[in-house]
Image (cartoon, rainbow, N blue to C red; front, side, top):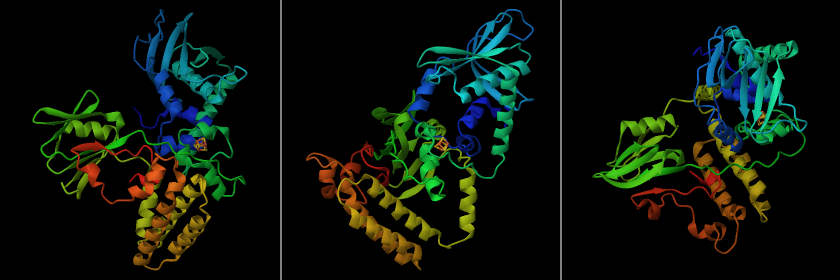
Length: 423
Ligand code: SF4
């Protein structure tokens, strides 16, 4: 595949939001939400290749599914869900999980995408006069004629997307857009926070509720055990006896302690799914770790290198101050009780971190802030008698959870705790 070809799906993203397009296409940053997962579900059938698209000069046109075609002229590659024959022409049909607009018209981004597919078919020699969208939620099929106006609109969208892709930085977020609420990248983009910092909006940021991670780490501590992979699951065995089995989709990282072997196949599966693998001594000291291909998030690398070149020039101070400010934000947004004193103290400590002139002072400030934050932490949890909030202060904050880690292997349950605690 020509790496320069723009996927038609990305042109859809561009029309939805240029920043979303940039984050996904240029910076290769992805995140799933309920909508994207439902979309994959709807595409399960049409993503299975079947049938063959007839050559343009063949008479009989049949239905084909999951067809990938490209157009050098447009600089676009498209995966067509379905191509149907219709009276000597072909019609691309694109499946969407949701519904059309309230008045029955297709969404502009969907329309551009399916029209682009039609143009790609044309460029490959197929007669094509219209395209269709199928909305699964309402089971509606909408026809779109390829008028000259639509063709121009599609070409302009592709050209605009390429211009944005050539930029050194991502476009700014949309302001107060309802699109952001359903956007899968809202947690990475932070539209309200970014716009507030840039004074582009006056209202306070809408509340951001991070999803509890679905995946959890797997720790394998049983000496002499072996980690393999079978049918999409990690299997832990010892002397051919099965000790445990976990679905790969449920795993965030694999940590093996001491004399534990991991098969090459298991490593490959982990790397393919962005699951890092860590090797530790039986006492818990980290020897090293491995992960798959690094991310294409170039902007992050560029800034890391720039910061590294500045040596100690305040980066540690900014990181600690930022961490304290984030703790304060979480507390401010989520605490149910009176935490004004904590908020004031954290604000003061964040300011002191910015002004710290050596690392010892900075570490002291970070420790003091952490003590304060976790002191107020129960205020963010439900406080019924049997809840975590009621028991939190008794649980304390331990560097090691010996009672848990003494079991041969376990899943460390982070689901019910905010991310700041999950480390
Ligand atoms: S959150 Fe909003 S601004 Fe950010 S990428 Fe998504 S749609 Fe665009």
